[in-house]
Amino acid sequence: MEIPAPPLLILVVGLIITVLGGTGIRRNRAMTRTGQRVTGTVIDLRSHVESDGDGGTTRIYRAVLVFRTLDSQDVQAVVGMGSRIIARPGEQVPVIYDPGRPDRAEIDTPAGRATWFPVFYALVGLAILGYGVYRLATGAG
Image 1 (cartoon, rainbow, N blue to C red):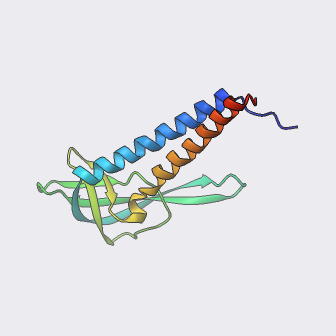
Image 2 (image 1 turned 90 degrees about the vertical axis):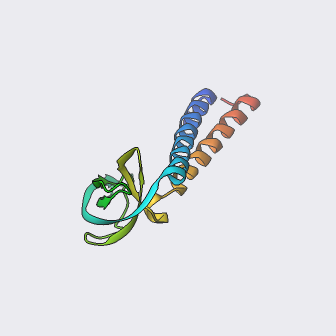
Image 3 (image 1 turned 90 degrees about the horizontal axis):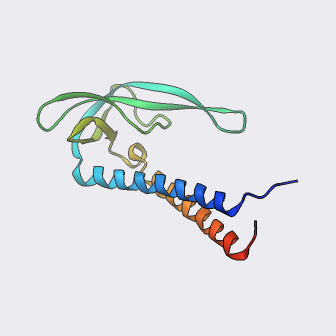
């Protein structure tokens, strides 16, 4: 027998997911607006294993980059977004970094930045919120 979640819990979960997605969208927009673009080199890949929820695992990689900022500062940074291998050690890649914190850098490609991910998160959160509102409005729960 399945116990339905109360509508208020659904609303809280939806709100949290929506806020997380919105925060990611805002962070991506700020990086696109104010980030500096240079060319960098992948010097290493740091990996860890994540569970896929079905008893299997997936290896996730985070690239370690070196690059020179526009004001000639040499920087080494680990990208924030882990993924499958999108670049190999020794490969030159486009880099976008935060000029206020150059250690916050990303590979400036659609796969490297994954700007779609926070949008997806926000949309899922909004769908959950809508379902919670529907449950409250219909008195279900």
